[in-house]
Length: 430
Image (cartoon, rainbow, N blue to C red; front, top):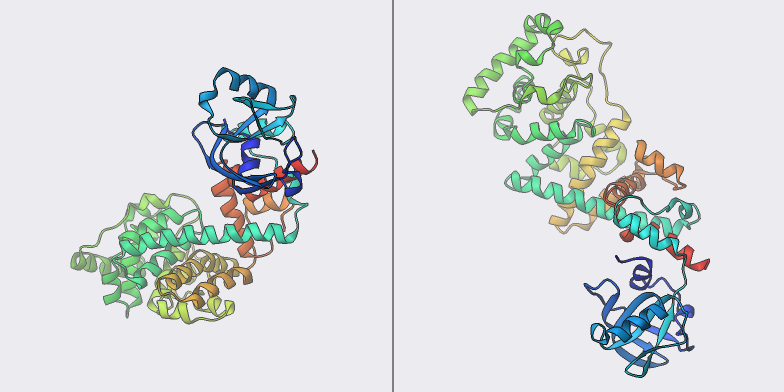
């Protein structure tokens, strides 16, 4: 099992002042070598030892005496050794064919090896919170910036797949991404499922009529099915003039375009009914606010809020589902909801479109929006704030989501910069 010593050497965590052999010769690393299948061996390394360049293999072991015994038993396993690295130096030299092999001693807490073992077995992460609060702002933001780019690239890859599924039509791709963002995380998957089966040709041909756009959207969402309406609202819904108009339009359009719909049960039976959000999407689409030109040419955060906001009129102004009791009015969207849509739809689509068009301005605009938006508030962000991280904007919170989901949950500690800082601190104090 590769442990702390392996990590320390591969990541060059020792300062140059400590790269000295037990004989007092200075070591300069030109190439740490390739990791070999044999867990304690680096092959084809290049070093300068005492000013003399050497190429060959490097052996890592806990104690020099243990390694010497192994060499005596089988020299053939480790040929062309140029350096021997140990945690403890308990003998004066290591011999191979009567020649002295230079030795570098890296003292570090033995506990580090146990922590590596636990991390590699996915049983426990490094206690990186011990060092996070002590890191400089430059160190922390340098790592967060890298994580942010990784997250944007991951989202770009998902949009790329949606773009291919949409026969590389950007308008359709954009609408699909916006629709998913209206799931606000919890219902994102079912909104995405619905977006995939929507007939964008039918929508485009009937865009002038909000009623027909709503009929297609609610119909293909399976929400015009009588069984989708709670029994205690069903009578009121079925006698509603609005519901009956939608149903009539959908039947006509369904036959005309052979429209398919998702199973209404996919939406669940919770209180987070999707009806108002679907009505908002229909309104945005009808008013051409989801067009690519509108998204790409908007220049300010306030402009995006205004572009994506909807003040529902008519039936959905005072209903949350078909046949439901009247509410005091759904009105405009909340600023936090608009921020979520910008973070999860506008920013990634601008970024990937900018890359496709080789337009750095759009990529920069996408990143700038994240620094203007407030940090998201969720359990993951709160947890990292408690660990000492300063999270001020959406760029920071997006980076933290990447850290949590792609590193911490996958126990990829050895690829994480915070683990690097933790181990470096442990070395400095030893």
